[in-house]
Amino acid sequence: MEIPYTVKPRPDTGLYNGKLGIWLFLASEVMLFGALFSSYVLLRVGAADGTWSMGLMDIVVGAGNTMVLIASSMFVVLAWAQLKQGKLSGPWSSPRNWGYIQWKWATVACAVIFLMVKWSYEWPSKFVHYDVWFKNSAVLHNKVEEGYHHDGVAHKSELWDEEKDKKFSLARLYVEKEIYVERFFKTYSEEDGGSHKAFNKAWDTGSLALSGHINGYEEAQINVEVTGWKPDAGVSESEADKILLGLGISGEEGVAKRLRSQGGLLKGNVSYDVAKRAEYKLTKSGFSVALSVAGYEPVEAHPYFWRTGRINEDIGGKPRVKSIRFALDASHHEENGEIHHKEITINTADVKRLNSYEPKHSTFFGIYYTITGLHAAHVFGGIIVMLYNLLPIGLATWHRDREQYTNRIETFGLFWHFVDLVWIFLFPILYIL
Image (cartoon, rainbow, N blue to C red; front, side, top):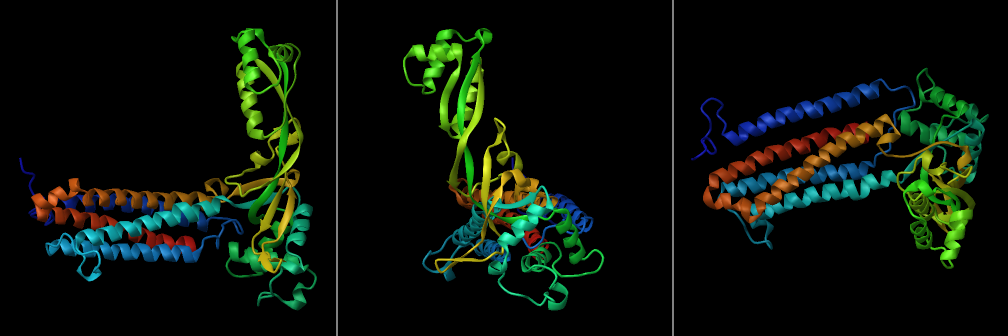
């Protein structure tokens, strides 16, 4: 049975089935993305002064990805045009003579580059970028002075007024006029609802966040102590002793028996992961366990997805992380002839909230990851379709019915242009405005 109107247009619409179907699909996509764009606009317009983050996107990266997608739209048109001329393939060494297959692979390459930039560079760079809020304004003020004192101030811009600003410290002025304005307002203003009054409120109440990267931290070394064992836990004495021996205690089974019956130190000065795994195995076997902090060890790392609960997790009355080394954004420190971000040490006891630039961080990042993630899923789906059409199973349609295959590529091209058009709207509202 032959399906009608796969090549010839329908008499009622003037479109063949594939093109009619893709236009109906794209109409539903317009409603989907339109709702998200509308939500973004309404949330941004309704945000309180100084709460909607701006200037956090890398415009160069966003513009580069925009150029990549525009190039891919051109390549998919060239691929379809080669099919219309009956040219399936051409020599790889001569781009002027490329056929459908070469231009289609060029489109795939652009799509892969886009996703690699998004998923392996742009998103991961945000997952190690943090905002930290302090419990009181005095700590905030001290950390600003420590991190943005005169050595860390690069220059005075046109926003600085010598007469008006002389009552404030250089560090405070730098944070307000070089960092805060760019992130939340774009332009400096002393009017109601402007940057100056919003900054003063955040400064006085201590609700201002400092931004930067974690370069290291002091993490707890933990003692694991057995404090008892329940015989009715469904585990025999011999099995419980084997579990203790399996966790690395030294000595014979008599040591395990004494530890089970009398309690005592099982592991000392171990890492958090080792301690928690031991605690889990022991509690499942009827043991009661007490964890305590034996000390803190410095760790050199750039952790992902840290939150307040992670650093302040209670271990025997002490936090899991004692302090963090925080490299401040837009700070400058010279060391051995090289310029680095200025590092400050933050005691976790002073931290009210710590959050990476993940969806939970703020409304802005929540909708940013929703829209760009959905768009990236469309790009990934497009790659799957293009690969199918390039494989022998997809090319079989070309060898059976060239016109139908050409129409199939045309309908995909319409989808791909829509994906590119969505990004052209996303780029300015997320990266520029």
